[in-house]
Image (cartoon, rainbow over all chains, first blue to last red):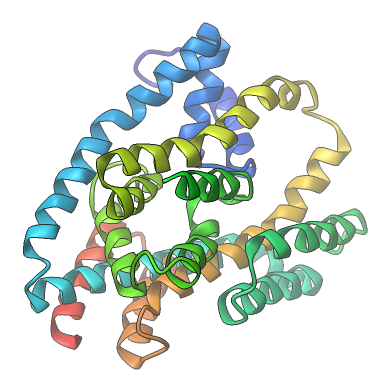
Length: 146
Length: 169
């Protein structure tokens, strides 16, 4: 959209993406909703979202059906489990990249580590953790600790 | 199916940082609370969504599909995207107007450590379907390290994880 069709300026696109990364929900899904609205209103949002998801949805279901047929073989399960674990590792790597600026901000680092401890190790519900973490984060950011 | 839609709609509104952030809570509800599938099956569905082309939010459709068939898949995807989409829809204009407001900067800074903590948790939960065993730690640790240290296409990292999984499990 930016490079081929020139429907939107690069800076503007980056701005929309930044918004959607900080809103809850899938990033690309939200981008489609915001841009669809800007150009064509509510209907635009729905069409943009459906257009974005339709083909990948077919792909992912096809792959899942294929896997369902082969899941009886332990070797296939082992490979797919390995892929899933590697995907988990990618999330961990992404989070480390995101957290790199926090190395100079002990308060922010402590908040990130506490979130991990409480959710991943303590298995506390996100619905409990998010409000508390948001309060601490807001407090920390206001005082320039993050 | 109603229960599924309700859970995913709620998760939609707390998915700060996207899909990775809600993976622990989604797994807790689907595996621990409801017993709809095992932790291993959950990680395998996630693997399929990662390997397929398209946004990783499609894992919600696979989880719904596993629980309640194709209709369940569509309901799960819709329930997860709908509330957050409505929020993005209504806030898009406001955000543009507040471009230089100081609270926006504070808000963005506050969310960095929270997202980072949530996303690490998502990775940890997905990478430990059989508990914290050395095979999983090796695959996940190596994948994370390669992602941080190099510019390799993540698909190669996933493929290597599959090869390691074949030999280790």
